[in-house]
Length: 196
Image (cartoon, rainbow, N blue to C red; front, side):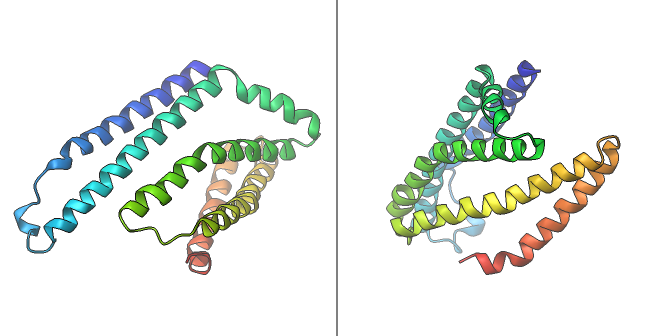
Protein backbone atom coordinates (compact mmCIF):
# COMPACT_ATOMS: atom_id res chain seq x y z
CA UNK A 1 0.00 0.00 0.00
CA UNK A 2 2.86 2.37 0.85
CA UNK A 3 4.39 1.88 -2.59
CA UNK A 4 1.08 2.63 -4.30
CA UNK A 5 0.87 5.93 -2.40
CA UNK A 6 4.47 6.79 -3.24
CA UNK A 7 3.89 6.06 -6.92
CA UNK A 8 0.65 8.11 -6.98
CA UNK A 9 2.35 11.06 -5.28
CA UNK A 10 5.22 10.89 -7.75
CA UNK A 11 2.87 10.65 -10.77
CA UNK A 12 0.86 13.66 -9.54
CA UNK A 13 4.09 15.60 -9.02
CA UNK A 14 5.36 14.77 -12.52
CA UNK A 15 2.01 15.72 -14.07
CA UNK A 16 1.80 19.02 -12.18
CA UNK A 17 5.42 19.85 -12.92
CA UNK A 18 4.99 19.07 -16.62
CA UNK A 19 2.05 21.48 -16.86
CA UNK A 20 3.97 24.16 -14.98
CA UNK A 21 7.03 23.77 -17.20
CA UNK A 22 4.87 24.00 -20.33
CA UNK A 23 3.47 27.28 -19.02
CA UNK A 24 6.98 28.45 -18.15
CA UNK A 25 8.25 27.73 -21.66
CA UNK A 26 5.56 30.02 -23.03
CA UNK A 27 6.70 32.94 -20.85
CA UNK A 28 8.44 34.81 -23.66
CA UNK A 29 5.45 34.76 -25.94
CA UNK A 30 4.73 38.14 -27.44
CA UNK A 31 1.64 39.99 -26.40
CA UNK A 32 -1.22 39.08 -28.77
CA UNK A 33 -2.15 41.82 -31.23
CA UNK A 34 -5.77 41.70 -30.12
CA UNK A 35 -4.87 42.99 -26.63
CA UNK A 36 -1.95 45.32 -27.40
CA UNK A 37 -4.17 48.38 -27.14
CA UNK A 38 -5.61 47.18 -23.80
CA UNK A 39 -2.44 46.34 -21.88
CA UNK A 40 0.51 48.60 -21.34
CA UNK A 41 3.64 46.74 -22.63
CA UNK A 42 5.67 47.74 -19.55
CA UNK A 43 2.97 46.49 -17.18
CA UNK A 44 2.66 43.30 -19.20
CA UNK A 45 6.42 42.74 -18.95
CA UNK A 46 6.29 43.40 -15.20
CA UNK A 47 3.39 40.97 -14.88
CA UNK A 48 5.39 38.31 -16.77
CA UNK A 49 8.39 38.77 -14.46
CA UNK A 50 6.13 38.57 -11.41
CA UNK A 51 4.53 35.37 -12.67
CA UNK A 52 7.93 33.83 -13.39
CA UNK A 53 9.17 34.68 -9.89
CA UNK A 54 6.02 33.07 -8.48
CA UNK A 55 6.52 30.07 -10.76
CA UNK A 56 10.05 29.51 -9.47
CA UNK A 57 8.90 29.85 -5.87
CA UNK A 58 6.00 27.48 -6.54
CA UNK A 59 8.35 24.92 -8.06
CA UNK A 60 10.60 25.07 -5.00
CA UNK A 61 7.57 24.59 -2.75
CA UNK A 62 6.23 21.75 -4.89
CA UNK A 63 9.56 19.90 -4.97
CA UNK A 64 10.04 20.42 -1.24
CA UNK A 65 6.55 19.25 -0.25
CA UNK A 66 6.64 16.23 -2.57
CA UNK A 67 10.10 15.20 -1.40
CA UNK A 68 9.03 15.65 2.21
CA UNK A 69 5.88 13.55 1.75
CA UNK A 70 7.84 10.78 0.01
CA UNK A 71 10.44 10.88 2.79
CA UNK A 72 7.80 10.76 5.54
CA UNK A 73 6.08 7.80 3.90
CA UNK A 74 9.37 6.02 3.23
CA UNK A 75 10.63 6.21 6.81
CA UNK A 76 7.18 5.40 8.25
CA UNK A 77 6.98 8.76 10.08
CA UNK A 78 3.20 8.58 10.20
CA UNK A 79 3.37 5.23 11.98
CA UNK A 80 5.83 6.72 14.46
CA UNK A 81 3.52 9.71 15.03
CA UNK A 82 0.62 7.35 15.65
CA UNK A 83 2.69 5.49 18.27
CA UNK A 84 3.51 8.80 19.98
CA UNK A 85 -0.14 9.94 19.99
CA UNK A 86 -1.71 6.58 20.91
CA UNK A 87 -0.83 6.70 24.64
CA UNK A 88 -2.12 10.28 24.96
CA UNK A 89 -5.79 9.32 24.67
CA UNK A 90 -8.10 6.32 24.67
CA UNK A 91 -10.53 8.04 22.27
CA UNK A 92 -10.00 7.33 18.58
CA UNK A 93 -11.56 10.70 17.77
CA UNK A 94 -9.12 12.61 19.97
CA UNK A 95 -6.22 10.60 18.53
CA UNK A 96 -7.35 11.53 15.01
CA UNK A 97 -7.56 15.22 15.93
CA UNK A 98 -4.12 15.14 17.58
CA UNK A 99 -2.62 13.37 14.57
CA UNK A 100 -4.06 15.96 12.18
CA UNK A 101 -2.95 18.80 14.49
CA UNK A 102 0.65 17.58 14.61
CA UNK A 103 0.70 17.02 10.85
CA UNK A 104 -0.77 20.49 10.23
CA UNK A 105 1.75 22.18 12.52
CA UNK A 106 4.62 20.29 10.89
CA UNK A 107 3.57 21.32 7.37
CA UNK A 108 2.95 24.88 8.58
CA UNK A 109 6.50 25.13 9.95
CA UNK A 110 7.89 23.79 6.66
CA UNK A 111 5.84 26.20 4.50
CA UNK A 112 6.42 29.26 6.71
CA UNK A 113 9.82 30.31 5.25
CA UNK A 114 8.45 29.97 1.71
CA UNK A 115 5.42 32.11 2.51
CA UNK A 116 7.60 34.68 4.27
CA UNK A 117 9.92 34.90 1.26
CA UNK A 118 6.93 35.11 -1.09
CA UNK A 119 5.46 38.09 0.74
CA UNK A 120 8.52 40.03 1.85
CA UNK A 121 10.84 39.39 -1.09
CA UNK A 122 8.85 38.62 -4.25
CA UNK A 123 5.76 40.70 -3.51
CA UNK A 124 7.87 43.55 -2.10
CA UNK A 125 10.23 43.63 -5.09
CA UNK A 126 7.25 44.21 -7.40
CA UNK A 127 5.65 46.78 -5.08
CA UNK A 128 2.66 44.61 -4.15
CA UNK A 129 3.45 44.08 -0.47
CA UNK A 130 1.54 46.27 1.95
CA UNK A 131 1.91 43.84 4.86
CA UNK A 132 4.08 44.52 7.88
CA UNK A 133 5.95 41.76 9.66
CA UNK A 134 3.69 42.22 12.69
CA UNK A 135 0.60 41.77 10.52
CA UNK A 136 2.18 38.70 8.91
CA UNK A 137 2.58 37.00 12.29
CA UNK A 138 -0.89 38.05 13.42
CA UNK A 139 -2.32 36.55 10.22
CA UNK A 140 -0.34 33.36 10.83
CA UNK A 141 -1.77 33.06 14.35
CA UNK A 142 -5.29 33.76 13.09
CA UNK A 143 -4.82 31.11 10.40
CA UNK A 144 -3.70 28.54 12.95
CA UNK A 145 -6.61 29.34 15.28
CA UNK A 146 -9.19 29.20 12.49
CA UNK A 147 -7.72 25.97 11.14
CA UNK A 148 -7.70 24.35 14.57
CA UNK A 149 -11.24 25.49 15.37
CA UNK A 150 -12.93 24.91 12.02
CA UNK A 151 -10.66 22.18 10.67
CA UNK A 152 -10.74 20.34 14.00
CA UNK A 153 -14.51 20.79 14.12
CA UNK A 154 -14.96 19.40 10.62
CA UNK A 155 -12.66 16.44 11.28
CA UNK A 156 -14.37 15.76 14.62
CA UNK A 157 -17.80 15.97 13.01
CA UNK A 158 -16.80 13.67 10.15
CA UNK A 159 -15.31 11.22 12.64
CA UNK A 160 -18.53 11.27 14.67
CA UNK A 161 -20.63 10.70 11.55
CA UNK A 162 -18.33 7.89 10.44
CA UNK A 163 -18.66 6.15 13.82
CA UNK A 164 -22.45 6.30 13.46
CA UNK A 165 -22.40 4.88 9.94
CA UNK A 166 -19.51 2.40 10.24
CA UNK A 167 -21.61 -0.39 8.78
CA UNK A 168 -23.16 1.85 6.11
CA UNK A 169 -20.38 3.45 4.07
CA UNK A 170 -22.79 4.90 1.48
CA UNK A 171 -24.76 6.67 4.24
CA UNK A 172 -21.49 8.05 5.60
CA UNK A 173 -20.43 9.32 2.18
CA UNK A 174 -23.77 11.03 1.53
CA UNK A 175 -24.02 12.63 4.96
CA UNK A 176 -20.36 13.72 4.86
CA UNK A 177 -20.92 15.31 1.46
CA UNK A 178 -23.96 17.18 2.75
CA UNK A 179 -22.12 18.37 5.86
CA UNK A 180 -19.12 19.58 3.85
CA UNK A 181 -21.42 21.32 1.36
CA UNK A 182 -23.22 23.16 4.17
CA UNK A 183 -19.89 24.13 5.73
CA UNK A 184 -18.56 25.43 2.41
CA UNK A 185 -21.71 27.50 1.90
CA UNK A 186 -21.35 28.92 5.42
CA UNK A 187 -17.69 29.73 4.77
CA UNK A 188 -18.61 31.56 1.56
CA UNK A 189 -21.37 33.50 3.32
CA UNK A 190 -19.21 34.39 6.34
CA UNK A 191 -15.96 35.02 4.45
CA UNK A 192 -16.73 38.69 3.97
CA UNK A 193 -16.53 39.13 7.75
CA UNK A 194 -13.08 37.53 7.99
CA UNK A 195 -11.45 38.88 4.84
CA UNK A 196 -9.65 42.22 4.82
